[in-house]
Image (tube, rainbow, N blue to C red; front, side, top):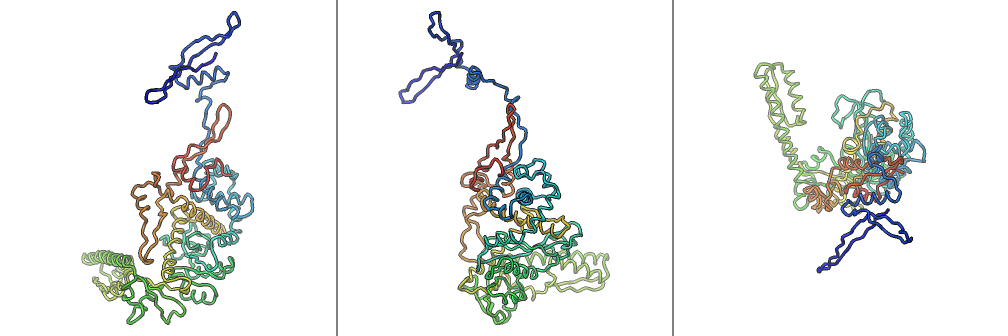
Length: 576
């Protein structure tokens, strides 16, 4: 028996061709004279096409089984997020960056990838890799890595830090170019680490020991090197270490270092003057700006009558250029903030006065302590004059100091040794503002993407290894964010500013993306971390079908497909 397909077709007056198929179940045989004949047993035309196909397969001798009995999804593991990070890691040759092939390198690479896509401490990270919660451990052959092996890989990576950073410097720092440097901190859990110390906490964790780490980047913000320092290290001291690294480890003799006003101090500049080829860009602190504006000094508001910036000289800064900038938007914001802080302080002081009036507070020493806490709370103590006595508290604002500070609102003075022929005034302003890229890296590393803090390690080298892994994950994340910018709220078309002092503006394309929350191709726009979460829904499934095991990816969503197009690679079935 077999299934025959017959039917009729015709063309309409309008030229449309129509077909009406007929499916017949027939039996072939020979009659008594030996001639072949066919007998129609049934008309199958009314059956679904799937049923007709199944009947054809059965008549050809195939065995059909029930799909639910023969088909089983044995495992479904998130894959898209680690696959995206691995594709970018391959583009950046991260494995070659780390060192020669060995098990320690594979584990270190897995730690960097996992930190970039799902930041957790080392032991939970080992757990979710080993338990098959991702394809990372299985594909890289490190699913069974023990705690001791993970720590050994961290120690191995720490021992290779100088070589890794030298390779990154060769990639992204050029002689005579610009490098950015800044210092941050993270608090420690426990008190046994020799690096842990009390210092200025940028996390706002008072009473907790911390470590400091200085980050060196290229001008665009790619992390190049990181140095872990005791928690009590000052900004200028850390900058001194960075200069030693640049010249000693990287062999770069000519470079322009950019740092904030607390980093590149007068003492550090004196050190830089002794190093031929090392230039700097920084900014003056408020007292130095006030000295330039005092009486008939060179800094006067008339400088900004035509342009928002002007270049001046001063005998106190020999061989240097001073570029004065005035930002009216920043000036208005600082004036408004000052008034808000003054008002909030007076509200708190009034509460103390009410306690005095009610007789609950009489001792002048206690009144002074409480008042001191209040005026220090909002950091405007310099603007108040207090009158304290037994059962008495009075205050008034120091209008002269307020006016003197307000006169400098929105004014910044950039200090640089770079000659105008190499970098004009607008270029120096832009370079100083590019420190925002280092701040962004700190946000990525500390909180937004990599969750560096708090630090649980007790051994100094383990702390260094942890920070190095986070720095390398930040390097990977920097490039991932750039490649996937189309699918996030990142502005890909930042307009060139006519005025380098003016606040940055978002492009029309970015504003349109913000409003519609869609790309130009109508794909949804997400925050970067939300995009990674969506990528993780692209899973790899282990399917058992009639005794055979098959690894197969789920069908990518349009966003997932576009993400890998932006990364320049198809979705890999395995991380190889």
